[in-house]
View 1 (cartoon, rainbow, N blue to C red):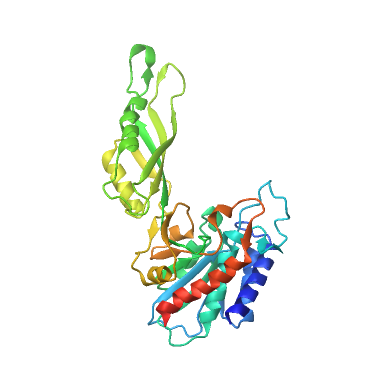
View 2: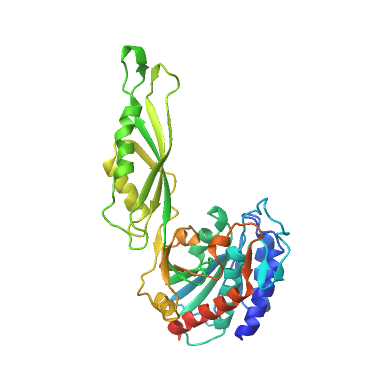
Length: 353
């Protein structure tokens, strides 16, 4: 069965590559995925450009595992030497836009879902979700779908990790800060200079060390990246605006970090969004232990994915190599997909039966 599913998965990936699916324009690939599942007599759900389904013998009294990956792609860059929409296998490499990020992961998870789809008496339910807008962190992809899926116990998020176990992922929070002073004429020593008001806070962002340090990532990193103040040389500025890039680790939630910032600085602080959360799964979680027993290693992922939108334990794991993502002449090895399907099934067999 694995061999048949692998052949079908690779054929589906070739169809997906041949079908442009830029973020917010994924309708045709959603149709391909829907038809693929329907051909296997799977009852599907579809909303916007998202497709999801549950195992045949779904039991509401059991916990549910979410298998998720995305089918949108970035636009091909100017350095491509091949047709990005021409799926071609050469010396074991399947070339094409989205082949590595994250088509190989998606079709491997779809094959894994089908492997378990008709099995009875499992300890867990399965939910497969092929979602949109991951590449732009959009709101009409996984974030839109999650409330429709019911209770979820944990997730496997398909992103290219060489089938190693990304047990943590950094969050991202962009913070807008405004220091307030009072305008005045520079020559008469009037006003209250907002730049000077901002300087102690900027110094704090540069030097502060959060007490809790992530095992995977080390300390949280805050970087002041933009600043704007003043309108002309002889006017003391009333406001000084600056932006802070905050890379949050799994040691804190975005909300906790924001509260600590507001407690320590005098300027006005507003987070543009707290959506992109740090995420993690305990190393003693059964799915992580199952992977370790199969020779997989754990690490903290520096890249952001849809994992940031999940409020449940989640493991990022998939065939392919993150270093190939968004590169010209993108490819995934056929052998990586074969290995991915086998390893997903072997990992899950250890905990669902």
